Amino acid sequence: MSLEAITFDLDDTLWDNGGVMTRTEQGHYAWLDAALAEQAAEASSGRFAARFPLEAFVARRQALATAHPPRRGDFTWLRRRALAELLGEYGLTNEHAEHWADRAMERFMALRHEVEPHPEVETLLEALGRRYRLASITNGNVEVTRLPLGRHFPVAVAAGELLAPKPDPRPFLLAMSRLGVHPARALHVGDSWEEDALPARRLGMRAAWIGPDDRPMPQGIHRLAHVRELPELIRWLEARS
Ligand SMILES: [Mg+2]
Image 1: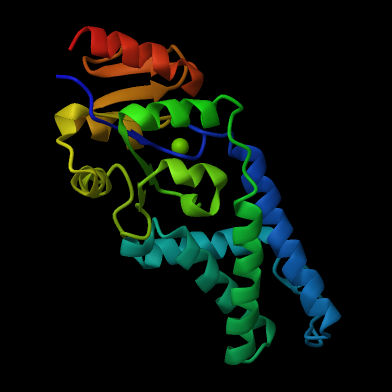
Image 2: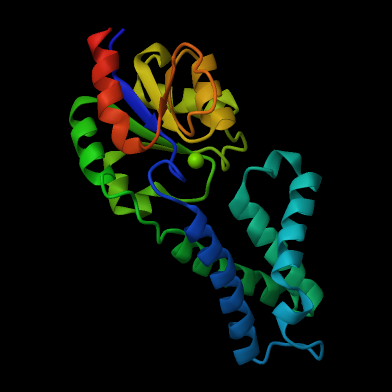
């Protein structure tokens, strides 16, 4: 069956996300620490980041994810809630804790969107968008509409905010329904075996998995070393449909 739609994972599929997350994680926390010091908001207990180092923030997010299973994929909620809790324990009033958690999240989101798509991606999406319906499906907290390449995606699904992160089938089905396409006529492209390739395949979509050549490919899943190889795979699939 010929293809009508292509859905894309974002992080580590259209760009390398490792560096972005490190810069974002450290950057917004350091910003918050400096901003509080400047406001002399610090209690007698010293600097915020001295009392609650980054590891404490990470641990608090993990504890919240465990305590609130439906929210485990909603990273924005987990981050904001963890910040507000730590700020409250640091000695800020509720109102100030909420205020600074919001400000830190604004900073986080600004840094989070400083992604650099692979150089081939813009041309690739431009060309594919002329022929296929395109959607993004991410578990991450990037709002694709905030990026220049967002214009290529008429449908953008934030799976974490649906409280149904991939591999849950719901974000895939939501994308299919918004695109008006049957799964059998769609190809999903992503770097996670468990969260992209397998769930897409289970729904009857075809899957392009970006990963190492370290396992046999089941029928319907095709390995790519890089997203730039996608046009070749699509030509091959279309020739056989
Ligand atoms: Mg990914």
